[in-house]
Image 1 (cartoon, rainbow, N blue to C red):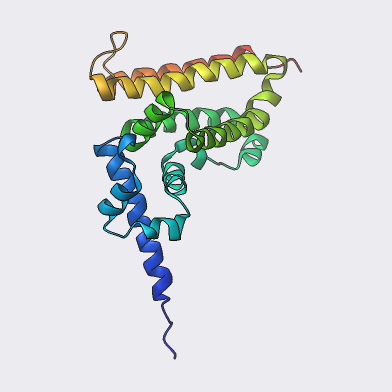
Image 2 (cartoon, rainbow, N blue to C red; image 1 turned 135 degrees about the vertical axis):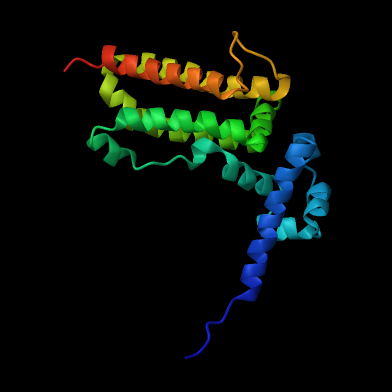
Length: 213
């Protein structure tokens, strides 16, 4: 039986790309976004910087691919229509927000990316923001808008406040290490209380603001 030929160059290219992406993450953790220079990324990865242009086209495209790999919402793509058809729209929404809350706590690189988005205006960051909004639009159009009808905009505002809280309540203790509103977000107990309230708010809206049949 003939042996399967392993495509060495393709495999090596993929390994190199992954090392370059990992270098972006390492620099973000240690130096922050100001350290994301082509020469620095190449040095940390241990490659010539020409490989960045050869494999990604530009430094911005390399960073863009890295951000996509870390961003929670751009990876959150449940089979929404199927879930809604079996009556699990609320569950999809709650699960998505709670998973984002936990994901942001663990992902220090994503925390740096969020701070970068808040402090600078760059095309590369606007691109990822648009992708997040596209995912959110899909959720609204398939999950909340049909259910809440004339109250749909009010529900979007509620979810905007929750999403903003999810970001801030992870970023604040990560960089200041203090309590917020008397709740220590560094503890499991504090985070559990916030998660309970997120669920309670969403369930309350589903109970009280459903569109009239």
